[in-house]
Image (cartoon, rainbow over all chains, first blue to last red; front, top):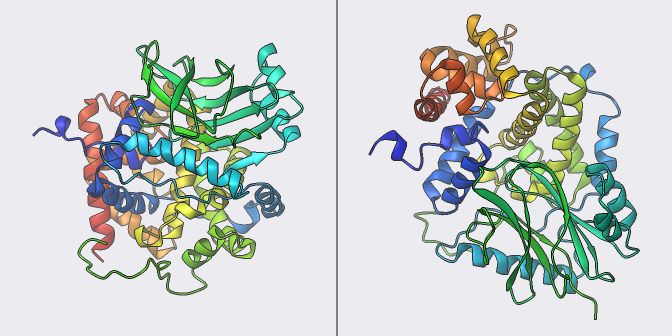
Length: 252
Length: 197
């Protein structure tokens, strides 16, 4: 076997955050199934962290930074469920979606804020800052019952889903989406409480900032997911989701 | 754990000293803000040091430090003491954020040009900008200095400059696959050297 064929080979570049986004996503899928690789990642990451330079002097750290951080975290719910690598094998991404549905259900029925969920006012402010709102977009963003559900995607992008149950619509915004090859797009998905998935629209693979209203009414959607798919999109996800964003469930 | 036959209920991993950063981080994961403040006090300066080195801009490094600390709070549950130190985990998050930002702020050509400047000089100066008084960091520098140049240079350019392996390969006029595998070998050699003492 040559070095080029060894699927473990990218582990060093991965630890150094030196893989291009598409290769990073591919390697993370490989990691899901490779216990030895995950151990090597942990060991090499520990070694790489030893390259960090000296801490800044205490004087270089702004005195009010701790206060700002504490302000931020008082508004930042902690992740409750570890989103570590799935341990399943063959039906891996189906299991992840089932997890999304159960997470969302837990959040709804248990009243637990499992993910960041910010009040509508903050949602509008943040979304506006993220992206110049288009008309259709702003109708969702300014809906009186709009809620924002934000997360970080596996590829490092920041993403948020804004949901208006009253309007039966949802919008998706993201920043820092890595560019994909010309033959790939980002695809969004609605997940039903059963775990069934419906395509909810495509985002161009050009990356960076993206915002759009999702196709079709929201219905009973409990989570919105995003995957990388071949150009033109797929009927069902063919790759591991980059992120699954529970959006609560329809009030009845 | 592999090889253990015991069927005990999952226990929170032992993290030794209750005042260690590891123990504080585990408590912070349960919403303990005092413990989180302890994590901040232990690690904000190293985080900002790393962000300053990569971004070369104190204002941006400060923003990254703030973002990283909030991410530490938000994702503290993902930290596994049995897999490594709290400092290593937090610095990995910091490296990721700083690298993302430097790539956003500076085009690849610009970073590669700077890489050229680094290469024209003595690239391990990137590692040792000052005489190191800290034993752990001095050890890391010694280990880096011991690495063959073909392993050291890709690590330096990726870690401190935020270059991808493809960009490193372009800067070195080397085949990309070779650079990718040298990054792995280089990190393994570094790890072995660090563990050898």
